[in-house]
Structures are given as C-alpha cells and as structure tokens.
Length: 51
Length: 578
Image (cartoon, rainbow over the protein chains, first blue to last red):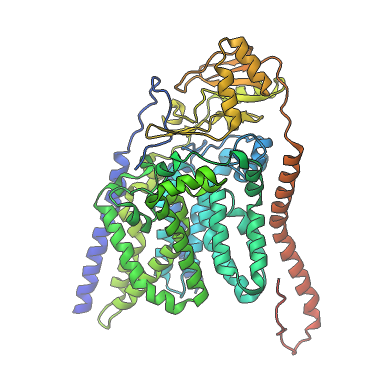
C-alpha cells in the first residue's frame, strides 16, 4: 500500500515539476527581453551597467 | 558501467547544450558583446600579440585566424560553442566518484546550466567557456598523471586549449598544479602550465609599460549581486557578473533563492559521500581550486580599492579585476558535490517500501532542476543569442583595405562598442577591425554605468590627439605620420568622427573607408618578433607534443610486445616516469 502511494505521489510531484519547467521555458520565450535600438544622439554605446 | 548507462550522460549533455544554445546554432555569425566572429580573421601581427594594444585576445585570435583558413568563421563558431558546453558537462560527470547515473546527470546539468555559463555566453567570453570546459578534463588528466606516473599525452593538448585567454590560462594553471604537482611531477607541471600560457605572458610582457589598467575598472568589474542574491551568495551559485544587462530575469525572483537552497542542500548532502569515496589528493585539489576562485572573487567585491591599486601599479594585475570570471575555478567542486548530493539523497530514499518509480522521479527532478530554476536560459537565453549576417559593406571594406597603400587602419568613431540594427540592435564590440586584413587602431576605452575606464593602447591616444588637429588635411598628415594609412568610419555608430583628407575608397550606408596620403608601414620591433616567435613555437611544440608522445608510447609498446612470450604474462615492471 505504502509503495503504491509513494509511486503515485512521486509521479504527481514529477508531473508538477515537469509541467512547471515546460511552462517556465515557454513563458520566458513568449516575453523576451527586447533590446532598445541604439540612440544616435547618445555619445557612446556603453559596455554595460553595474548589477 | 554498461554501455547504455555510459551514453545517457552524453545524450543529456547534448540535449541541454542544444536547448540552451537553440537559435545560436543557426546560420550566420553570433555577435554578442565581446564575441566577434568574422568570415575570415586575417593572420596579422596583432593576432600574434605584437600589435600596439594589449594582447587581450591572445592566443584565441591566432587560433581562430589559422583555423578559419580552412573552415569559415560562421561554421567554426558553432562547434566551439557546442563543444564548450558538452565538453564541460561530460568532464564534470567524469569527476563524480562512483557509478551513480543520477549523480552524473545532475553534475552535467549543474555544470552546463548555471549563471556563469549564461552570463559569460551572453558577454561573449567564449575562450573563458572553452577553459571552463577543459577544466574538469585537466583535473582528470592530472589525476591520471599522479596515479600512473606518466604524463598523459592528452594533457599536452588540454593545457594549451585551456589557456586561450589569460584568465582561463590562470585557472587552468591553478587546476593543473593543484591536482598534479608534487614530487617529480612539480617541475614538469610548472613547465607545462608556463608553456601553455607563454603566448599571452610573453606578448603581455612586451606591453608591460602599458599593461597597467585604470583603477576605476576594479569597482565596476568586481563581483556583484546575481539578481536578488547578494555577491557572497551569488558566488556560491557561480553568478555575480558585473554587468546587470546579461543577468537573466529569472535571477531576479524567488527562483534564484530556490536554486541557492537546492544547491546548498545537495552540496551538504553529498560532501561526506564525496570525501569518503575520493582520493584525499583529489579532495584537496578541488577544494583548493574552489577556495582560490572564491577568495579572489570575493576580494574584488570586498576590497575593490586594493584590486584597483594593484591593477594600476602592477602590470597584468588587471586580470583579476573581473571578479565573477574567477569563479570558473569553483565550478568543478560545485558540480561534483551536487552530483554526490543527488546520489546520497537517492540512497536515503531507497527504503524497503520505496519502489523504483519514486527514485527515478527524484533523479529526474534533480537532474532537470537547473532548467526548472532558470528556464529563461533555454533557446538561446530566450532569444538573446541570435546569429546575424554582416552587411555586404564589410566584405567590400576588406577588399578596399586589401588593395590600398601602406599603413594601418584607424577605426572611427573612437569608441569600443556598437549596437547596429543588422545585429538585431544587440551590443557587440566593434566588428569592423576583425574584418580587415591589417592591424587596426581602435578604441579600447570602456564605458560602464556612465563611468569611463581608460584604455591602454598608446597609439589610440596618439590618434585621438592627431584627430584634434584643426583641419582635415592636418589630421590626415598627423595620422599618416603615426603609420595610419586608412580611416574606416562606422556610419551607424553614435559619436563624432572628424573628417580627414584623403581618397574615398568605399562609401556605403554603413561604412566609409578613406585612404590617407603619405603613410608608411609601421614596422614591428625585431626584438618583439623574436620573443613572440619563441613563445608561439614553444606553445605549438606542446600541442604537437601530444601526438608525438602518444606515437612514441605506441611504438615502444609494440617493440616490447614480441618480447612477452605467451604464458609469461604481461609486463609488471614500473611505468616510465615522465
């Protein structure tokens, strides 16, 4: 009985984690962080900005 | 381990790499920040490190310049990126002691799918990633050297491959010495580490006068937070890059904290198992690498002024200013502990009433955890790695410069980075210099968060002074006197570029190439050439030594074999130490 429960529990948790992974990957693709075009009036393109 | 179990980590590693790179493997050149690949990088003086600027891309540029004589740059770039990920993951899997398949899969995932990989990939630091991939293999080969007493031929290739950039070379040297030094191996290990790093060491020394970097860079490039994780915690998960632009959005939320917790729990669970099942020397080597990487990275965060002072006063000390780049040394231990932690948790889950399914599910969840916790790394970092095609003007500019009179090229405007529309409006180091068949004088100044970090190339300063002359004719004369025979202007880049007098060789929507009258070629100093030739010859000798050593051993083995008569058994004498 315990074995059956743990099997179903594991499958449920695994399914939830797998679904969350797929949803996470898909949703991050549908809202990509866009790059703003270079502003021709700015004096220079910066290498980056501090975290 | 049976055959299919051996193939599963390979398939998993390849699948993760393909998922992460995604569109980056499509046709065209992937250009992102410092990653500039061109159809054919010319074999010219500065790729060997004898140009006027610091040899920052030595030896990686020379290797690419030679290889892309055979394979076009766009084709070469793909296997390099794919190989850097897969090679690293498989190396990490091999470092895990025992035969737990789940442990290996977790090690692969942790090594290939983490903030260090995504951030360095987006920053375009591909030689660092090649060094990252080579690191576990260096540790494995070093261990074999220690155990057999014979220098593995593979190490003669791995060491130079791990030293394609200065910082990667330092990490490779630390790993090699940590795992192999001791007794009669110390001198050869030191010699190998030195020879593998010789091209950038020697050519860097030739520029020693200019190799002091702006102290302002130390604070800007120090270890930083990784999204919501403060710097010391960011370092534990191999994050903390200085540039907030390359940190993925998932690092800004609860997933980053969850990732930290999972990693710490796995490491804690796996530490005892790892120590118990590994050779003492391997434990010391991996912990030593981790400690060196972590301490140096934390130093840039805790004491940026001291790092800045060092960079400004000690030639070459600027190498350590990019704090999170040093975390490359922490990665092997992190992956191994995570793998061992997975094995330990699975062993604990194996109770008398527990079936196979829960353990398989747990193994799958742990192996996929890096993807679950950083989903936006998938498919080219959510589309941020997108190859492009150069406008035809770039090939035309190359032809124009090739057929022009003597002198080097000055790239204008005098700024380092571009963000052209044809690169999907993404930032990239000015790609024009790498397109051209001659040495190019280009700005090496960096602007970060509105703070300018001064460059080191004295010729750029001289060119800037020449451009300040009042008339186009005077500017052209002064530039020609510096050995500059052409000016190449990127019309799409912001910033001003004073006009210079000369013959227009190319005038397109993107580029303008002007030939200046009266320039002469600037000869490279003979002493520099001699020093560079010696360094490169030594480096090449190490690489070519690998097949030579393997062949010599094979021949020696063949010569010995007939002496072993049937029934006398194999040779049991000691192996020849190298």
